[in-house]
Image 1: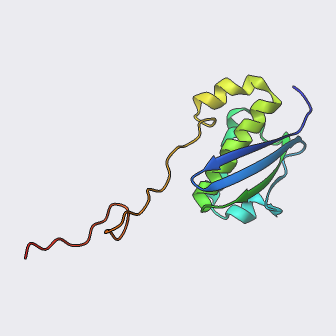
Image 2 (image 1 turned 180 degrees about the horizontal axis):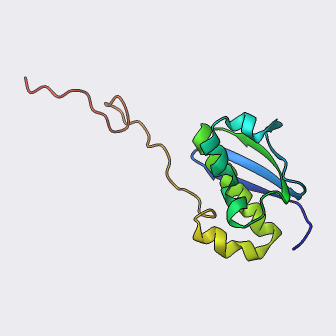
Image 3 (image 1 turned 90 degrees about the vertical axis):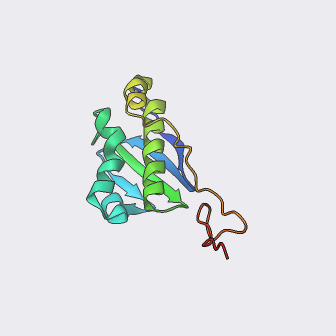
Length: 130
């Protein structure tokens, strides 16, 4: 294990997260707030910790996050990916287990654009035969 800190970027939808991972006692801050205070929902907080749980490194790293854009779930996905990338940058042995859990793969799904002559991307105005 190396003792270097690493800054990595994770993206999901339109959210972008930058994570600084350093060896420490498990402090987790997002935009200068405690993570549990920023996220509010316990289920989303558990999703944030997933990369640390699958690599058994929970409580051994301090995680400092700057996240912008998107909504709550997009930001959570971006943070998860960025933490996973930081763990791999810190210790290459984590790559197989993170890859197996799908934490290193960028989710390519984006919002479909609105088309002209329609109220939304797929929704159509009501059809009238006469």
